[in-house]
Length: 326
Ligand code: TYM
Image (tube, rainbow, N blue to C red):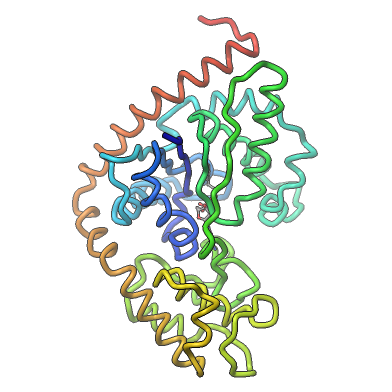
């Protein structure tokens, strides 16, 4: 059985990009793979975050993931900082990766903005991510399109380590969905939907109410020629709406263009499909938030299972580089 690992930052309200680009696909992976999913709280420290907010959002992310259909009987769900091997392996990989490689990461360039005051953790972020993946011998990493470059780096680091020290790591592959891999901001459809840099009206949260969804979709930026057509470069707004409709209904987004004459009709269909797709998950979420003790127990059990796999891989790597066992 293939091993799958992926991760998500507890960065507040998770949005449609997280859902269609990643989480929804994880739910399917549970039935076909030995699946590990990680809430990456250490990665959230790369940007300024209040301690209480981080704690609350970490538990909340667990509730959203469970509500979305992750099932602790069929996958291992855990919090990154609960498994110390992630930080231990990161050091070994930092001594493998190069400054030049990390400097080329577009996410660092975007978030760091070229400032001297940028945190070192933001720079080395992709190395921690590589550790997350390599510790579990993951064959596949289901992610949205924006993580493609980080996966390439992970493969590069794993290959270099293996070349130097023997066959220690499995070299993973990114699995990027055909539809929903790049959900764009509704207000600025040339930018990806994102909690940290997106506009509030342009970002639809998984937990948004039907009224909020209708309001945001109605205000979504389109263009002035009035033709519903699939054209990512000339008509990014309309194309994004079609791709959301495709993602929510399971239909081919390009073919859907022929079914609508007016933007208003398309927007109505998109809101309706999103509300319908999110309703079951929102109901389940409310039950889970009423039982934080139960969710904590799931995370504790997950981290125990994850640590068994991760510690064994870390020891293999530590032995290989020549660290003396205690
Ligand atoms: P994060 O927390 O930003 O996003 C979690 C997942 O959601 C996907 N995603 C999107 N997909 C489509 N359209 C969008 N607009 C959109 N925005 C986000 C992301 O591609 C991701 O799959 N570095 C990672 C977290 C991470 C990780 C890992 C992932 C840490 N360690 C190990 C995989 C394996 C991140 O910040 O994702």
